[in-house]
Image 1 (cartoon, rainbow, N blue to C red):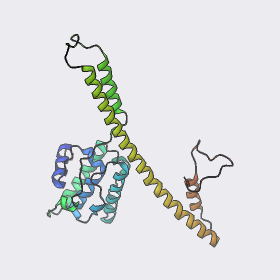
Image 2 (cartoon, rainbow, N blue to C red; image 1 turned 90 degrees about the vertical axis):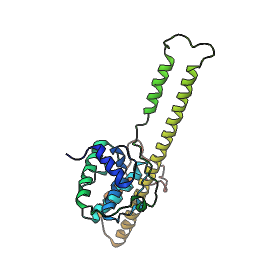
Image 3 (cartoon, rainbow, N blue to C red; image 1 turned 90 degrees about the horizontal axis):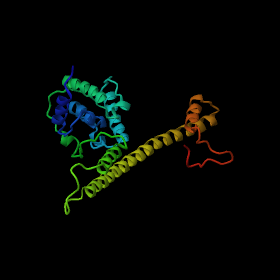
Image 4 (tube, one colour; image 1 turned 45 degrees about the horizontal axis):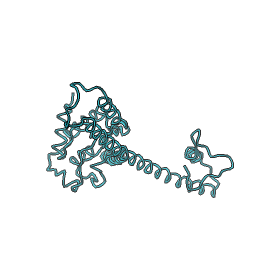
Length: 250
């Protein structure tokens, strides 16, 4: 059995001078990167986003971590697709492993975590809640406000409970809207991040195909890659006789 969640979070906060409150917050990957930096001192911390809030930022942090593992010949698999979901069990298991690795490899040298991350902001990560959770809460409040009030009528001149409840609901809805807008912005950035990668792949493949055509070479692998890149989902086919916009390859 490894350390408990409370012990692990206390260790992370003490080592890195953070203020995490739960294991799930390690799912951003930032803390894992800096724990490795405390051992080796050469992790490119300028590339680690300590206050990452969106999944595409988490993935970028894990890319740094994967490069460290590769450079140091550490064979432990990093289950990025699970860790970025900020689930407790997955991150607890990985944090327990990384603590054991730290115990076995940390040389006891002085380590200044704030200086290593060059004062980068370290807002405590918030685990992502499902969209709509706030709506259910507001709905429940609305039902309570609209129901019968025990204790009779409000005295003349007393506070208007209905008005106070309405204001609370408005504030809750505004908070939910702001959260959803932030979530949508993150999804749009994530979409653009992956689209850019696909576009780069397309350009490289097309250039190689053209070069092969000049030399009379057939490459079935490249043909299969192009087939995947240009495939469409049912319902998204280009209508007959209508050319595809050249700038909208995907």
